Length: 264
Ligand SMILES: Nc1ncnc2c1ncn2[C@@H]1O[C@H](COP(=O)(O)OP(=O)(O)OP(=O)(O)O)[C@@H](O)[C@H]1O
Ligand SMILES: [Mg+2]
Image (cartoon, rainbow, N blue to C red):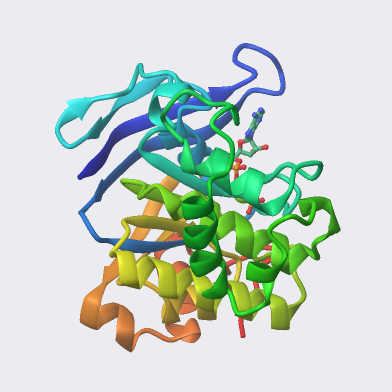
């Protein structure tokens, strides 16, 4: 469904800070794939997601969606088919707007923006129903400003907003990393529920190897700008964290290292 072929990306080209962030990434994402992405610091995980979202263009390579070459599509044009949730709970919603105003905006993704249409009673019923999935009582707080919410509540709301208009692809970049473990677990459960029930095609970067193994049908490991491991289905379900570390060692001849990676 979404294909990356030979994606290369350098930052600060020609300066002494030049970095080869992506070094020929090939990835064929099938409809309904829920892919977890792990890898060492600076492996190119976020850069891969950013390339898909069109935050910048690759130096080389092709990105296609349903067979159409979208490599040169600007970010706003891709926003129609992409849902995103970032690490920072403050990023996905507007603090000074209410929950319902934020949801009304998310509901207009891909259409012309603006709240001029207002929030109708029928919208409110739908918003309430969507929010009740979270299980945190947000459905009774539609008029509250989003700035009043906790990090976990806000990240849960962002998950709902990112998927209200069904995205062709959902990009999650360590979206639970800034939360305490219990809240992170809650947001991850919600993620799984939404992805499974809507059969969303998803790329989820996580620094938690256990989450990467338990969630999704496919796992890829990146290192130094390349995809070095792709496991799926049966094979993935048999893999343990030890297997992942061993596999990394046998491929790279060095121990896996990341200051953020959680092994348990
Ligand atoms: N916008 C940018 N400008 C300059 N360099 C960048 C930019 N984005 C990423 N890089 C560099 O590209 C490399 C890959 O970064 P990326 O953020 O993709 O890694 P990552 O796998 O997401 O790592 P982490 O686990 O630390 O989040 C790094 O060396 C990083 O410093
Ligand atoms: Mg990153």
